[in-house]
View (spheres, each protein chain N blue to C red):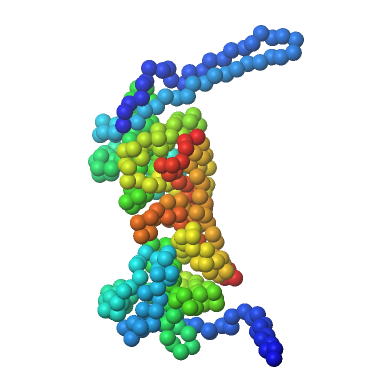
Length: 181
Length: 199
């Protein structure tokens, strides 16, 4: 007996699929899902987490104290990753994000970056430039920024050391005067 | 920094004209490149320093305003020049500085090159020669450096040409990258790696 499976029609992601909120210690088990995953950590500066105690320590020391870090949550309010803003200097901020692998390829990171980019200049009116530095090998993350409307400015060769290797990094930027896609 | 041989004449121009024949008139001008050398700056360079440091044409794309007093110039040499990890006077044959060039660490692996030249000496390839000298030597002197970079104002076309002539790679325009004298400027990022070839 044939079973016909019809593909759902392709629709643009409806608004409000994800929400952003501050992380808490009670998020530790969800945090460990992505933090222990070597594929997630591949282009990050950190090594995969190896124990729950290590995760609790990291959340306490670095996540809860972070000036701007938000959990990316689905409808059940459980985090599937996080997004953060770091100060580079008085006028430049850098955006960074990480997502559990199970949720890759569905537009969640794009939506999170779009949400933050839409609001951050109102929240921080002194910012003249929001930038992102992406490893040349991290094509997925480059696509996220391009889909949101960031400008790809160029490849900075041998720009920084990641896990002991010198890496070429792609520089992206979004200005208050730019338009979101 | 070893001193270059300086027994060549400055700005030598010679022209020769070939015999006029029925088909061609040809003249050649040969200009010898200005010979420059680099050496550390000292307090005794203060008066030469003031020549370029007081010139608003020179400071146009610099983060600093023209100097207005010898005392301020002396303070700058004491506070910034002498303690600098790598700064050299750009000198002609008479060993008097006409500008300076420096490499400032950005972090453990990146150094930023900067240079300034008295406007009287612009357009003669001097900055190009100074940058070339530095790019040729700096990685031997600083083996931990993996990347020499330069940030140039989008409007500073002269300085962009210097780096391109030496063989730096123009990586892209970083929009609204830096505050220069109260304005947020777009800056062109250039780099030169130990594995790159000088032009």
